[in-house]
Length: 68
Image (cartoon, helix red, strand yellow):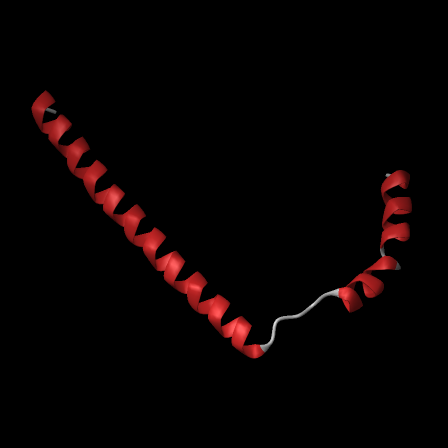
């Protein structure tokens, strides 16, 4: 536990220095990246929804075939 506190005490002073070195995106880059992420999430959600539908139908078919 003391080792963790020592490491934290050494780490914290470096945070402001590193934050000044970060290159932050401008508004256009941020908007474009957000749009790409939203489209990607919608595509993945659609794929997962389609897979769920297919697997649900397969499970229902197997259950009907087994007579349960």
